[in-house]
Length: 325
Ligand code: GLV
Image (cartoon, rainbow, N blue to C red):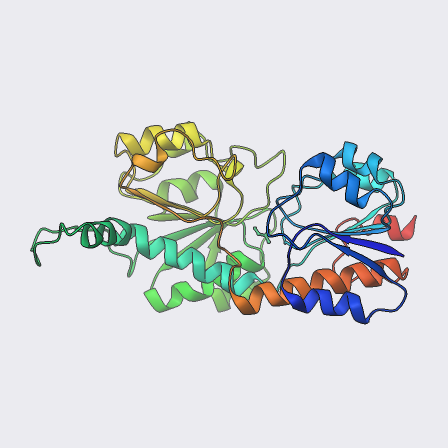
C-alpha cells in the first residue's frame, strides 16, 4: 500500500512506517508544506496520508486522491480536514490527542506569565540597549497568584492547564459542553460556570476548545467588551476562535490587560496592527513544540495510519463511524 508523508516529521513516525510490512513510502522531506496541487500530485495514488495541520485536506484534495483509506493528522486539532467529506467517501481520519496536552499546557502558562509580567516588552528593552537599571515603576504588570483563571474548553489540555493553576493558588472556573465528573472537579478544584459568568469574572481567560462552526469567533467584540478591564486573554487552541479585528481594537484601546497568542486566524499572517502592540505576546504556534512531544505525535500519527490501513481500529479515530459502515 502506498503512503504519503506530506512534510518532514520527527524520525519516530517514519520508523514506525518503515517497520510496518507492505508499505511503499513516499516522503516530502522538506520542512515546508506543499501547495494543494503539489499535495494532490504526490498523494494521488496513496492509500494512506500522514499530514500536518498546515495541509488543507478539503473536498478537492480528497477527490484528487481517490485511493485514500486513511488520513492521519499529526495534530490533535483536525479543522484542517473536511471530516464530513472524508466520512462520505469512507475515509478514516485520525488525530494525536493526549501526547501533547502537557507541553501545550506549559506553553499556555508561558504565555500567561509572559503577558502578565510583560516579559516580551522587558526582553525587547534589554536587547535594544534601552534598559538603564531597576526602577520602582518599571514595567509593572498583573499579579497572577490568587487570581481567577477561566478556561473555555475543559478537555485534556484544559485540565492540564487547570492542574498547574494550583501552584498559583488560583480559583479555576470553566465553561464546557459537559460537566467533569465530581472526582475530577474536586481534584482540579474547578467549578463549571456559564460563558457569561466566566467572561465577567476571570482575570485570565484561556481558550482550549476545538475550532468548529460553533466556536468560530466565540470571543468577539461583545465578549471582549465584557472582560474585566485588567483581564488577559490567552489562546493556544485555534486562531479563529477569536475575532482578531475586535481583539486588536480592544488591545489598542487598552480595554483589557493584554493577550498571549500562539495561534492566529490566518497563520502565518498577523492581523494588521497586532505586531505593533506592546500588550500582546506573540508566539509562532509552539504549543506542542518540544522534542519529546513532537516525537510522540509523529509515532502516534504513524501508528494510527498503519492500524487504519490494516483495517484495525486505530488508537484515535476522529470519524469511527467509517469503521462501522
Ligand atoms: C496543534 O495545534 C495541534 O492541534 O496538535
